[in-house]
Length: 152
Image (cartoon, rainbow, N blue to C red; front, top):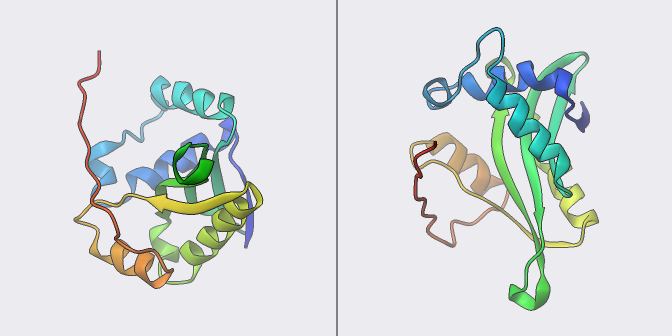
């Protein structure tokens, strides 16, 4: 398996992965042409230091992705942390170690950036994801909360 940072040409396939599950199918819009909002968001990610989309490939096929953001902080003696978002594995490759390999890559990047922890949130409906994250050593040590804001 090979890993690399996403570029704009990958955006359609990344959105395909994001939209291809029970929750993503209601949250994402995988249309041709791809909505301009995805291009704007990707440009903002690329412009922010320490923010990237990591892709996993089997041969030439994109089989997984996640967003990794390095967050500097003052708490815990100025410890940096890595935030993982938007984790997806192509449904045809689930259960084959893609997610674990993708997380090992993200954790290695976080360590190389001097992060003291890796954190993520996961929807309470994603029971399989919870088991997966627990198996990787993640602990549900905090209760996550979100406030949805209306968009203009």
